[in-house]
Image (cartoon, rainbow, N blue to C red):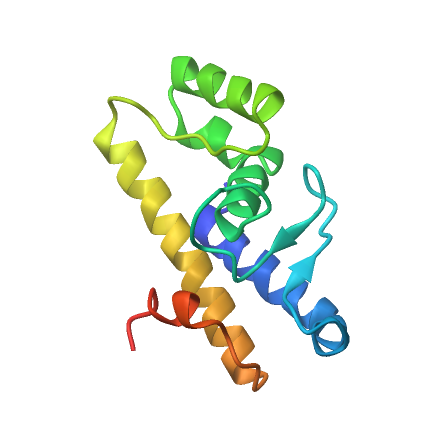
Length: 135
């Protein structure tokens, strides 16, 4: 079984590498990774989940089959409903703290991975993104 955390880190690192020249030209960190509605800002971490890093993580976990492995059947059905009918939102279990904790950890791993990779490439990241990193 592929570890969701390692798969996510690898995916985000590769995505940034593939788009680093575009970031310089565009002046932002918007990517089109071929997932869901295919437009996400890697540094969008506040406000709506629509087109945000959290939205990308959510759709990545669904499309790569990680939600199906992480969630009990009933919760996976709820998650699938969110993905299909409310694509601008993200799934969060209502009464499963263990699953929510795992998902929170994966979302933080995404923030760390994106932050570290962008900084290693000498990009200036937005302050609201920086504030979420443990520096």
